[in-house]
Length: 620
Ligand SMILES: Cc1ncc(C[n+]2csc(CCOP(=O)(O)OP(=O)(O)O)c2C)c(N)n1
Image 1 (spheres, rainbow, N blue to C red):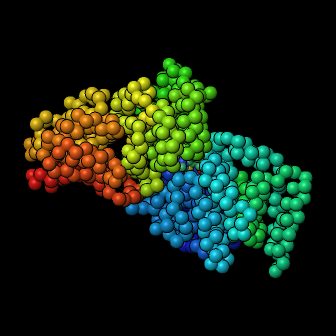
Image 2: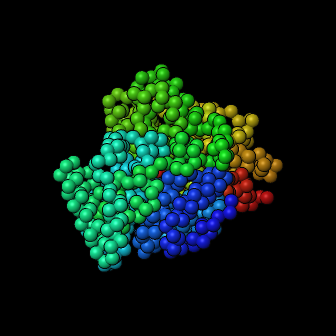
Image 3: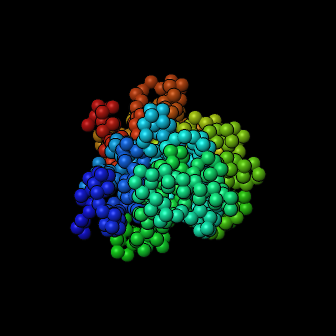
């Protein structure tokens, strides 16, 4: 539909020129644009619909990029992108070569900090605020943090550090009662009490707005009124935890009322100390289906813009894992499932309903979740932490110190291992194999299909000691060759036994290697060594590779520290004197694209593998 206001907003200063009474129309246009574009491209619809008025108010009151606006996770920054000169490219969001679905410092000067992983904005904004103070610059730093992100420990480390400082720091708590699913934990209940008790800290918007408009003395007066109000409130009621930590607290206010938002932000700005502004928003606001099911519309692929219906999804690696776990829990009362706010994405929904007493949503707290699992294991349970590969990066020390060093029996079910496509740089699952590879006594499986996933989980549960990780990619299993039957051993050999060229790989890209072998059949006889257990590597697999002339390792992950490096080392130790190549992600952060294009870029698709064989052997 033709837009009247949005095309004219090339920068925040254009937004400031729009008369106040026309802002609701602008908000409506933004919502229409979000629905139109994301119904095609997919993305974080519900979070952005809930942040429309907040973003308009932020860019009216603050002066970006001089003032820094730091978005936590950054999945709700689409409106910010539209209002900071990127509306004309908005249809490219999450598309190859298009705008990122998160803030990226390389994309705009208004994106002050990269985002993607939760609970970092407050620390970053505090750093920016301290830098401003040291440089005697009067700019403001604003962190926009959701109530879900407030379940992450870094937020408290930052609050502890920033409270009682004299920085120009504003923390906006965007409270919609949702993480991806319903928000969890004691803090969520604490926020609910604040929301439900209007006499608690009702912000007198009208009065303060009136005072703000009194020339010259307006801001100091607003501050004085606020101080008086806070003092009276503290005498009558308990102070909030934020005030106890040295912040001023304003709220909760209606996060869909632009006038109230602007007034509260102006008041916060006048204070010159750290302030928490607590706003209530509705996730999915303005799109009925998203308001009803904010979890489904948190991050959605495509959907029908009229009915809201997403395309049917069917079986995938996550759902297979979920089914296995439900069956395992029925047989074994020790089985517990732990998630860090990703129950739906990791396939734990059924488990959470069937076995609520053995299901734990730890919040967005991967470090805590890993050590919590260690505690469960020590207490005689059999915990499974289902987690996305990129978020597990946070738990490295906990796996080393709390799990592996005590050789506790637990399972890490690592979803989204490998390239993830449109979510891009921050979400790629390309580090887990390398970092788990460094930890003693950890066993790692990397299945290529659902049957192998099942078998790897059986091994992890019943035939392994200590920490075992099973890693699998996003989405569906690849099409494997008809003449391949999984052996369920620690490795498989596919192709000509006497071939001099050996492609070594693991995980879903085995399908590409097998294709390459078939296509090269009449040109160069090749075979594939498919590792199912990637740590420790079976000595027999090394022995087979040692007898070959060419060993080419294809790895959908970081090269440095990865499995291909270990494989090479073991080959050398065995006296291999052929030619070795490692084809992997070499010192790079792959940006958003389709998974197929990401595989092609790093020569991990069938064509890339064929080219590598031809180059190395000189054939073709
Ligand atoms: C470390 C980490 N773990 C998990 C996620 C996945 N994730 C993305 S957004 C989100 C929920 C955030 O909730 P909230 O901060 O309240 O924002 P809302 O979408 O509700 O506005 C989660 C769990 C993540 N981005 N980072």
